[in-house]
Image (tube, rainbow, N blue to C red; front, side, top):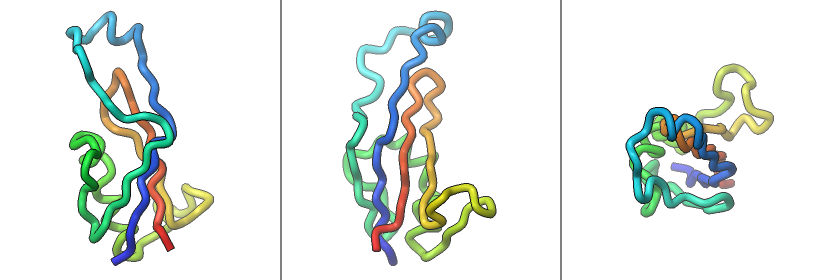
Length: 100
């Protein structure tokens, strides 16, 4: 099984949406841009957010098993995917790519 690198590419906070709809949260996310994780044997890396893992797990497993070319050419690198976590107030975008 291939190892898969997960890199935090972008972290955004929609303060206007938080002000309108979210109850105050002291600390919502500890991911930072440039942070990397390595998935071995398709498993969740230590320190990766559970919610983010839920959004990307099927892509990581597919890449780890040799799959590629999601959605018929979506990514320039067919052995990669760009996935965001499901936090509507603070989405974090992750680049997921096979390590050769």
